[in-house]
Length: 584
Ligand SMILES: [Zn+2]
Image (cartoon, rainbow, N blue to C red; front, side, top):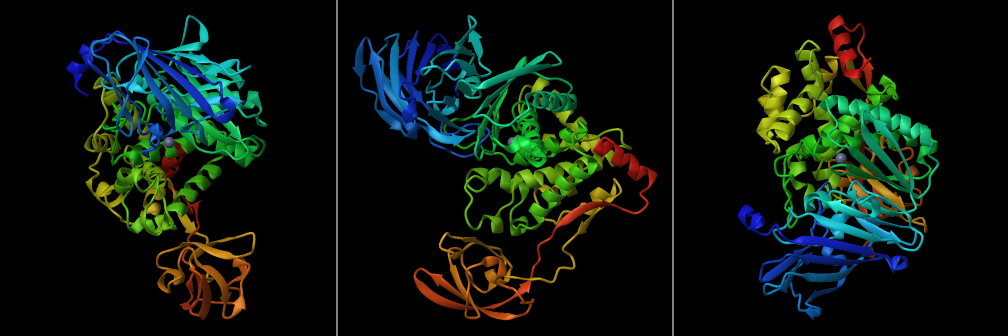
């Protein structure tokens, strides 16, 4: 953005009214007033993506009935491109724009409106004047029927919950808004006001949720040495099957299955999600890769560092909960072993580096297809593993004086607080090296920018642990495919893993497996009963309406399932590293 042009236009005042007269049909009606204009044309834009979710979602696709009024008359507002409307203002000071937004996509990153509530993911609701991202705005919400509550981190105007102020558009696009009759409760953590807004019901125990969230928040703030918000809002959507989360500057949106609170596993997943999204208020919202802010709302914003922004957040989500003592150390080690298993069972680990996985999130991670497991990895998974490796390296090399927390705090203080900008890849590497007390060129070459197999036992060994593959003695035969069985008992291939018998001998995604050695198949789980590696079988498939018989030579199932166990007789040094790592 051109700063001088920006400064010249700071006099405009912007306000919005959002109403929901057709909530039952998933519509919001937006009226925007811009006054104080001193220009001949006004371009209005809608972001194509929402920060935190690295996919171009084309929010303008949901806009209809766009019209602009100048001096009481509707004027032309032709589109210049997919997300820009152009209005000739000829020096008039005020323009009013109206449009409708269709909001019928349930997710934490998209807007959804029905008669029970409105969830406004703001980057898909509010258009903004080009070159005025710095401008403040007022938002007035006109609720549908009996909606009585608003939950958002945007400040109230004159104590009215339905009128909110946004200091600039970066903050507006980072402040989702929930309107309806949600269950709202709160608590304080060291002077910061936390508000929890539960939509959709659910069997949560309010007091337990408050207590456990409080403990997690304290542990996370301790990593960075401060909590930069005055207040923070958890917007939690409880659905029959809910999932996912998205981070914002002073709030987050979580998707939860409403009966998850009732089981230990489900509740643990909920706490992990809380810990993950809340940790982001530092890691990525403030301590951030240099390209992730100020954002370009028109295009993809590329970074090779999502393994830090997301992967380390994944690592800390488990570490933070472990530090609250809500998990046992064994439980924590089980979570880490799961990360190993996810990575090790992906052929993509030999194809895509974690830096490439970050960079291509826009076209690969967020746009998976049937071949993704063969060609990509998740920067969440490998990033969390790298977080663990570096944490252990630093603890071990510093004589337990430091850990990864010191790097996070140093980087936050240096780049967010002091330099007031994001970090480069080289700068974060230097931060690691400072606390690890050694150069990490070789580490980066192998694990960040390279495809070397992860040496789990070297890093776990610092803490007196090692991995054991529980399937090492397994001699089962496998096709190396995943299948889905339809209601009509058709077994359809949904994935083929590179290097397996199915891959080598030509089974394809989409094939219907009708018979093996001439015996009809209706149950994928018993297809290979009695078979061993090396057996030659005939797989009959239906492909594009034709029957094909594929000769297949079965191979051994090469999947791994690691667990982390203590070595026999760990040394004093190893036990000291273990104590620091797992907060024993
Ligand atoms: Zn995340």
